[in-house]
Structures are given as structure tokens and as C-alpha cells.
Image (cartoon, rainbow, N blue to C red; front, side, top):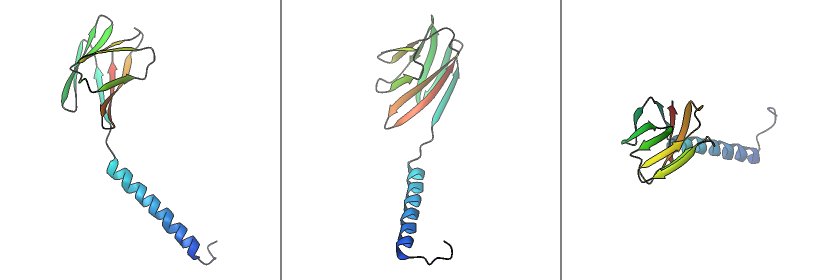
Length: 120
């Protein structure tokens, strides 16, 4: 193939593929948002900040409560055994005692999310 002459069709194909690759590179570069990861080692209380909002996590009689949680945010746990209850600015999680770490994803809106790991 190296000894063959470069035809117009093949040249156009190379230019189109190069344009697609360069466009994908620049799109990914300009739309990249660094993922924020928060790790909290919880004894009784843990304070962390998400988008300049102070979030307080507390252990209360076998449940984890997260206070000062903005109502427009959503929180999900990847663990199916964890039950979630949300009231106003407080989110409570019931979890099995054997659980040593609770991974949460807080969705802030505008396609932004923060991953939080709470260790017991």
C-alpha cells in the first residue's frame, strides 16, 4: 500500500478522519470537569464542603444523617441494602451494621456530581 499512489478519495478520507479526531480532542478538552471526591472518616461527626456548602454527617443510633443538604440536590447510594429518607435539608441513611464504607453520589444539577465515601 505504501507504493500505491494517493488518490483523491483516499486523501479526503484521511482529512475527514483527522478532522473528527482533532474535533473530539478539543471537545473533550474544553468540556472536561474534574471530578470532586470527598472521603470522610466518621467517628461521630464529619464536616465537608461541596460547592462552598458546609455538609455535616452524623451517626445517630444506627443511621447516618447528612444535615445542611440543599433541597435541590439529589443523593444516591450504589449499595442496594441502604435505605434513603430525605426531609427538607436532612438526608438519613439506614444501612447494615457490617457495612464499613458508604459510597454516595451527590448530584448538584447542571450535570455536576460529587462522589463521597463515608467510612465508619
